[in-house]
Image (cartoon, rainbow, N blue to C red):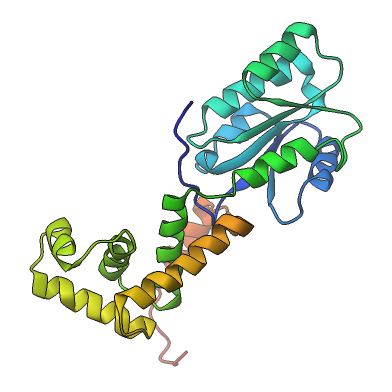
Length: 248
C-alpha cells in the first residue's frame, strides 16, 4: 500500500472525466456540493493541470465505455501522489472487469447516477478528508500561523513546538542559538496571546481534533486566468508609457 500524502486542503477536488458535459453534470449533482468538482473531457485534459496530485477522488463517466473507462481510471489514479478514491460509471461490466475493479479498489457505479448510487464513492472521498494525527497537527500549526500572522520561521518553530520540541531542539533543528530560539518562542506566545507554550499546545490540539472529526476544510480552486501575448504586450506598453502628471 502506498503511503498517503498530506493533502493541500486549499486545492483538493474531485476530478470527473467524460467527453459529454451532460454526464459530468449528473455526476456533479450526485456528489457532495461542498467539494468542488473539476471537469476534464479526456486523459490529456486531466493531466495537463499541475494540480493532478491534489485529486481527492477521480470518477470516469459512462461515455467512454466500461473497458476504456476502466483503463483510463487506472492510469489517472497512477498519476496521483495521494491515496485517491476512484469510481467508474459502468454499463455492463464483464466478470473480468469486476475482478479488476475490485483489485484496484475501484468503486463501480451503475446508472442512473444519483446520490444513492454514488454513496460508496462519496463516503470514500470523505474518509480521505480525515487527516492522520501528524497531518492534523500540521494543519493546526498552519491555522494558528495564518490566524496570528506569524513569520515563516515562527511558523516552522511553532510546528516543532507542537511536536513536543523545546528550545534546545529548536536551536539544533534550525542551527541557531538557544537565545534566538527562545526569542522566536516568545514572539509566538506574544502574537497568539498566551503566556505558556502548554496553553498554545492545548489550543492547537482543539484545532487538530476538530479536523480529525469534521474533516479538513475545502476551498474552491483558484481561478485560472488565461494570459495571451496581446495582454502581455499591452501591459508592457502601459508600464513604459510616461506619466501624465496626474496622481492616481
